[in-house]
Length: 361
Image (cartoon, rainbow, N blue to C red; front, side, top):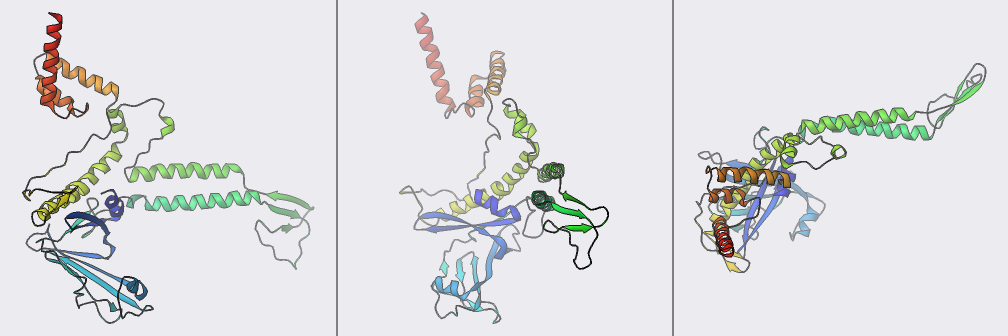
């Protein structure tokens, strides 16, 4: 999913699910050469996905194709639908698109669904693609590159200053301004070295730093500087400081979690109901493919010791006041204190309390 999020940052990404010898394999596919088609009666369900691009004949020969001209360019095409993965015989560019199936490489899976999850990156975009994660910062990044290149030129010019000579000009020499050319002028005869001061480069660096902050802000990045953090911050303080970044990550969680990981898990359950799937050498029992699934995300930032102390004090106050049961209190603290079984923890607390009473008696 990390690979999918990185590749899909430009707009969309696809994840292919395969079952080979009882094992699941997922591969991330860039959507540049993929064309999806959804069912008319179910716009959220893929009907087929077609992959089409040009390839050199030498590359096809390396993949085991015979009778291919290595110097010619071919159309390569394959298609996934609800019943099969169909490969087509490559066709030279200019002779139409591939239409003859390659029966040796085609595979019939019979899953009843297209084994591909199509993920749109962010809300917005056009058609099958979502919005690009970094689109708002592209122009600013180009400006940063330009300014840094000019600053680099300035440093080189400062290292090789231009010689300026004041004396009667000659007409047989062309005056060209540059680091390796002397400018010959008239009047009183004088010579100087022209160079760019260091303040110009410093101004460019400050300008670039400001542009960088604006670029990060435009894509909901974190503008905070680690040099300005003088003391450890609480988890809540970090969340407030990085609110823009968390907003972006929340959207990505929906796009790649609800819209990517969950459909992939549902496909795995449906495939496991049809094929024998093995995990760590053991056959996975049959599971209802319509089982309801949900995702539980951890906290953005781990609570600090001070945060945990305040939370424990608040829960203890509620329990002592009779406004919360001990069972609810233990369940509330279970996640932050790595308590796997709240009921077993309550039983141990009761046993320790009884043991303490017996020791006091």
